[in-house]
Length: 577
Ligand SMILES: [Fe+2]
Image (cartoon, rainbow, N blue to C red):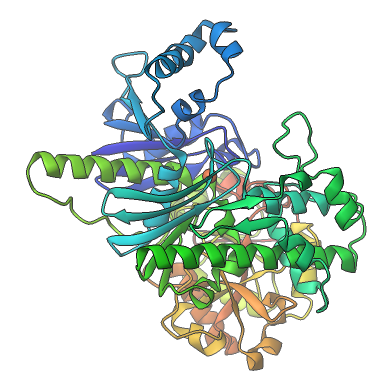
């Protein structure tokens, strides 16, 4: 069965193709139209995913959309149901009226046949079901507790559930405007950053706060968790639910916490402390909710999704601070990953339906995703062809790009590293990466000043050989963090060895690199270790600040020549300045 998943009109739109339960291609639209956080309909991504899967749109059996507008129909103001602006609004007005006449609410999903017979049937899924599909993709367990939390879906902002195979039992839902994601977004905006985008900057700032933090107690009062796992915000402090106002905090919030920081204003200890207080309250809240979920389900395994789980600092602690033994996360728990999640969720539903029709009981178990290299790929020959076509100077084909790149790194060069299929998700995982020697004391400043042009407080990530993780981080040796989705503490004695990839609080947002999924990247770090004794490189995404990660060799070349990178590897093609 071939399913095309899409998410659109969200922060990062994307498309994915799933064939018989396996992701064959997935790509965010921004990588192709080169507009950061592109919200347009993912036309280019759809076409590219089909190409990468060797399919035409008419080969697709079903289309899965990661949002169910029928749920929105429940709350359409009656004025909109009477007067249409475009005739196409009848597509929503008529069913909305009939739902009212029947006195029924929307189902979690509904299927329509596209306007033309050749269009595959389109199933609109509850946004949180798409997140569940996303949460389960890296989870090996058939019965699992699920927690989804983000800014908002059609109307939900939080969901506690149990997934058993393809079935979902909802335990508790929280509706807008009570939203932990938007609470964090409010503080993000108050601190002069962009809500729904820069939350991770606030997370990074938290490490600079001094100990005695008088903001924790008052911020804690703004959210209350109930015994069933639901929660509510003290709404008088917020105004994000007033869509006519861009300000997310109310006057009362200002009275309590002081004047908001101006965009690009100096960062003060007040700002660091408020950021730290937000992180504390966030962690306390999710911990309480997850603990309740554990009590209500009695399950040992948790799978999570939603923008709240882009919080890699908290992700690193989940199994320590909650009773769950394991926690599964994908490379893309934010909305960009709901295209993949929607396609996988629909596949699981259809597989279960077919198994039931055949009287087989359960559908075959889902395949566990171990990597996210689902994007376009360019062969060594194609890379060389582009370099020649552009008549680039200092081009050479190298026999062993991993060994040569390790030499470049050890000799102090900053590298653009472009290999294999592009990774999906907001973090580069060694196929579209910028790399540097992590031992450099000036490493953060060098990359910031030369390449990323971003705030100096933001840390860079260590990519470490998976088999070495227990020697460098305070974790069991079998720990795997394939998607840079968790922050862990470095072992104290290691901190001085890799100053370029340690944060102010002694942590690192690591990626454990495995030979099977990223062979050239793994070989590079191995060769770097052979030269230096350090099995780690600094890995940051291959893009300039404000631009999407590079996708094609042309993007990489353009980026290479507009910043201070020293060497670019396109496959086995080495280009020096
Ligand atoms: Fe979402």
